[in-house]
Amino acid sequence: MKYLAAYMLCALGGNEEVSTEKLTAVLEAVDVEVDSEKLELLVSRMAGKGLSEVLEAGRSKMATMPSAGAAAAAGPAAAAVVEEESEEEEEESEEDSDLMGGLF
Image (tube, rainbow, N blue to C red):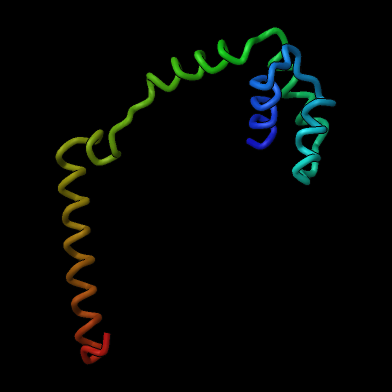
């Protein structure tokens, strides 16, 4: 993630072509240990692509991802199970407080 952030900083800073040297300079400026193999991989995969087109491709992929919680996506049966579990946890916590003699 730090390499991608450095890449974005370089690209947004006006560098049309981001090189491993520029990325290394950014990362070393904030005392990050640099793995040159990872930087080379990032630069090679981003070669010939603009930052805006990469971001747009990512947005289109994220549009297909579900945004609801797991219980809501699974339907009413899963929601009922989640509700039962939370009721059981409440009962257990009440029992625990009785065992401690009301100290807590």
